[in-house]
Amino acid sequence: MELIIKNLTKKYGSFIALNHVNMTFTPGVYGILGANGAGKSTLMNLITDNLKRSSGEILYNGEDILKQGARYRKKLGYMPQQQGFYEDFTALQFLYYIGELKGLNRAIRHDQAEELLEQVHLYDVRHEKLKSFSGGMRQRVLLAQALLGNPQIIILDEPSAGLDPRERVHIRNMIASLGRQKIVLISTHIVSDVECIADSIILMKQGQVIAQDTPEALIHSITHHVEEFPCTKRSVSALQKKYPEGILVQRSDGLHYRIVTQEPITGGLMIPADHLNLEDVYMYYVK
Ligand SMILES: Nc1ncnc2c1ncn2[C@@H]1O[C@H](COP(=O)(O)OP(=O)(O)OP(=O)(O)O)[C@@H](O)[C@H]1O
Image (cartoon, rainbow, N blue to C red):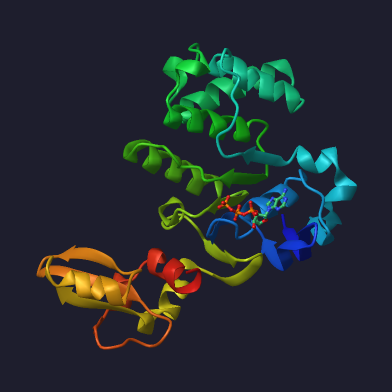
């Protein structure tokens, strides 16, 4: 199974939101990271065939998705960012309804709806109306509906927004196991959504892919660009003035001010590679 994006460009009028993007996806979890406006949603909407591209190709198993039409859309599961809900539906009714839209027969959609609500820990409240659900519960309903029909390509837009820490871990594990057999794309600007589960990270900026690799390789690539300055709560303000994008971290030996620099490090303590993380990678490439 392979999804290939070739020279994909999307213009809104004269504004280029996506600029000659190339990507290849096989089963696995892909984290697409970028600041607001980087082009992530535009990319997702082109892959889900909700938006008309300006030029380029999107090939699923060698054939353009536009030629495959409904055949392709049946292979897709899409979890959008939270939006209008069917407030008077129960969770189960909502999943039955989406299953019907996806063309699943009654028996399958009933079985899958119950099973998926169980998987996202909402089985006990399956008969309750969505209007009574919290943000995190709604998020899990949206994930469950995306998985109806056993899609091969799963597209998740900020899947863990609003989840409490326990559910976040559970959903993350669920997504990681989906990635063993399916193509899972997660679009987010929240690094923690993907840091432990992505096989590959794609960093986007102003409509272009600026880096793509495994999390390990990306972390390795910034080894000489992260440094820390030991400080106190008092002395930190001078550092904050000099490096406004740094962060304060608490270590066993006291406070440190951590910065990510484009230049090789400038006099602070170099951080060993095993203490670097994807947040640093994001700061280095995207900021
Ligand atoms: N319908 C539209 N008309 C004009 N410009 C648009 C339209 N949709 C998006 N854009 C612009 O295209 C760029 C990319 O937007 P997009 O929503 O794809 O970014 P994003 O990475 O998903 O951002 P976010 O993290 O905020 O969701 C932005 O500059 C946005 O203003």
